[in-house]
Length: 348
Image (cartoon, rainbow, N blue to C red; front, side, top):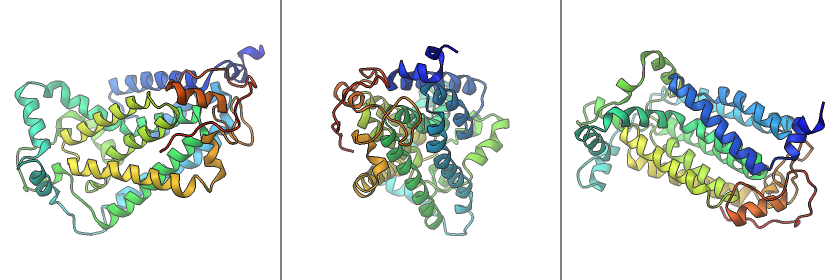
């Protein structure tokens, strides 16, 4: 085989930033096809989709080592979520009263839905918001893939934070179940809210939706709000200007969850603080103490193949991406170009 056509040869000729952009385009295209066919993109399916990208990067062994344990933990958390809603703890459903007091006696969800129907936006906004709602978790894993391709250290920081805040949220769901807007409206606590999922989800997806979100009283903290904001916090470490696109995506998710009646604005705000708090804790408590997490600072990692240390962008490449804010990193992966022993590190 021509060595230039092997995965290692391609990895040597491809920058991590270019691979990240190719990976983003590839996953978005496949996800778009699945959404068009009215199929939910699940994490296990995404993991399979990521394998060709790992092969192209020349880091298949590192992919298995880095991803399988973390995704297994996320699946364990997913399986546990249903248990939190069956413990018999009283459900708190009064968030809507605090929300009304903060917004002049009106609920943002009801106001947004009324505006959409008055102006004829609901015909496209309802399905669009539904798609955004379901894509939020696949998007979190796509962010993780981009980080893994560019900087393994930041990837590990991101995934560790994601897993930690998810399991901590499970404890909150277990001890203090809180009702979303649609639940409170369904039980007659206020009127004017439409459960949009009742007419945007086709019947063959109803059972799958129940399996993906088995706990209907897990509104606070909103992980739908927390996950995309965590993506923004992590991506700005390696892509300062481009990370604003992640924040725009986060804002879109926040709008969707409120418009659909799946969360209050208060839920979303707590979710954002939840993500920021756990990111800060990981940065302050674990990153200085765990060597593997410090590769983001250019201390140990190399890129361009599987080795004992894993892989991240070379120090010079990471320095360039932070300086320019572009994922099109200077230099080629695996060229052996000299670089500083310690690249500058952005604050989290």
